Every structure is written in structure tokens, then in C-alpha cells.
Image 1 (cartoon, rainbow, N blue to C red):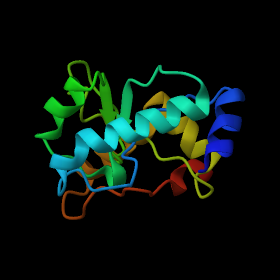
Image 2: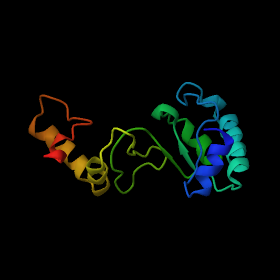
Image 3: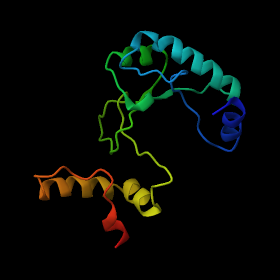
Image 4: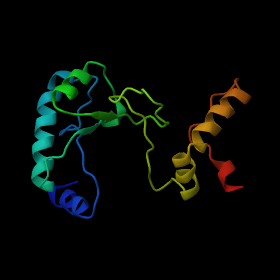
Amino acid sequence: MNREEIKFAYQRGLNIQLHTHRHINVDLEVDTLPTELSDNRYFLAEACGSDHLYHFCYPNGRYDPAAVDVLRGAGIRSAVLTERGLNPPGANPYALRRFLDGRSVTQAEFEAYLCGALDLYAATAGRLWPARPAPKRDVHWLHS
């Protein structure tokens, strides 16, 4: 997104938060993370007119435990992966799972995720059929 698109999204109520500015892979370039955060924070603060930037999204979900100290030192309170799932009490706030919404996600699938049914289904399917991995995006049961 460019500066104007970010500003427009923020003005419409979207909570804009941090990423790496140049979309580096944190697990490969953790040494450049402080500069990436600083550059991204400056750009977003200018675009949004707000410095309430405390949360981070790992590019491509690529996590490195060494990044946690850098994130914490930059005042970041939480960070999300691209891994789908619920976060139980006590989950590492710098390795949170999330749900990636998109055009291919149905309303039923989204609602099933929000109430926890999607993960319950995946966990149950994995126990019932241990020879095959639990489906990641198998939500056909929602449309029946």
C-alpha cells in the first residue's frame, strides 16, 4: 500500500500496525530488523498521523526467536505469524497465530474460526483419521 492508501484505511478505522519496511525475512536478516522497524514506524506514523504502533506482523510468517529481544526493545508488545489457530492463555505474545482472511474465505468459515469451531474441527479430524494430516482449509462440512 502506498502512503495515501494507508492514510485512507486508517481514517476509515483500520488499525494499522508494523511490518518490516522492505519485507525482509526476519529469520534470515534479524540483524537488519531494528532499521526495518524504525523505517516502518516512521513511514506509518507519517501516513496515519499516529504513533500508536505496538504490534508487528512477521513477513511471510517467518519467525526467529532472536527477533523477540529486538521487538521488545522497540516497544512492540505482540507479533503475529501466518499460522492459523487459536492462542491459548499464556501463549507467547511474540509468536501469535492468526486467521488470514481473503477472497477465498467464506463467511461461514470466518464465523467458524471466530467461535473456535474451525480449530476444533481440525483437531478432531486429526484424531479421527491419524493416518492423514488434519486439513488446513477443508471446510466443506460448513456448507452442508
